[in-house]
Image (cartoon, rainbow over all chains, first blue to last red; front, top):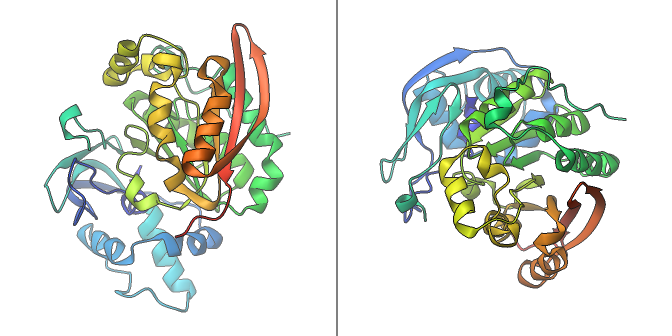
Amino acid sequence: MVRLLTHNLLACHVKGCTSNNFPLQFQNAQIELREADFNTDFLKNFLPKLEWKALVDSAKDLGDTSLPLEQPEMLDDEFLKNLHHVLLEIHVEEGSMTCPNCKHSYPISNGIPNMLLAEHEIG
Amino acid sequence: MIPTPDLSHLSAQDYEHVYEPAEDTFLLLDALEADAEELRSLKAVVFLEVGSGSGCVSAFAGKILGPSALYLATDINHRACDCTRRTGSQNKVAVHTINTSLTAGLHQRLKNSVDIICFNPPYVPTMSTEALEAQGLRGIEGSWAGGSDGMQVTNTFLEVVHELMSPTGRFYLVAVKENNIPKIQSRMECLYQLKSKIILARRAGREHLSIVRFEHTAAPTL
């Protein structure tokens, strides 16, 4: 399942590609929305680990603009609900993710991101 | 007692391409179960299984840690990724599956963040070329062919695992006698300040299996 949560943890790892290699940019993303169990603890636990701007921008790319540009200090219910939806309920089933730096493209097939590289591309 | 995950959705056809849970898998489950209380008290946020195969271990971890943790699983074999994902849903654990070699693509963002790492590597000693080929084929051979001392694939991961572990992080590794466990332990302590302990050992047929648990000797500088 490529959800925005997973996507927020993936960076390009082509040999020598070490800066501006995150976040990967979605191309031709086919999206499915699926309900997930809401869990406040999970969201609060995970919030400090997120790259916020990357999450907001990538959500926007997929057509969701519910998140504020800055991470709020007060975590009210509406914010947590939106965060839950963005992180866990938007599934990218098919498409690809392109590195903003070296333009390497990582395919997404059947909901699974393929981060494998050919031998000569591995750092 | 935590029940073994339901794997009834996986068929003989799946097991032609993906490693079927066996004694080594079950020993790892037993080790996690024995540590369950402690693992809960660590308040793990990120769990990562490297080389998840059927997904049995990740699903089991989900039963221990519950829904407030994130479950990440990687495998070089895309069929294994598919099995892992299905095993997650069958057992109501949201396992986020990534088709990659070890933690490639995740490493940069997961530095110092992973609370629990499990790795049941291809540990069977084979010709070195056989292990390389197996990883290249990205099929079931890659789940066992371990090259010289059965350590070829494991060694690559042992060089980077300390960077992934959170300050209180734990790393569970499946190993066999031929891997020379004392040597692994002393090297990990000396090079990466990871202390370790054999927390469970069992003989299964010809294999002398062990679960080695690593943790930081001191909190790393972040």
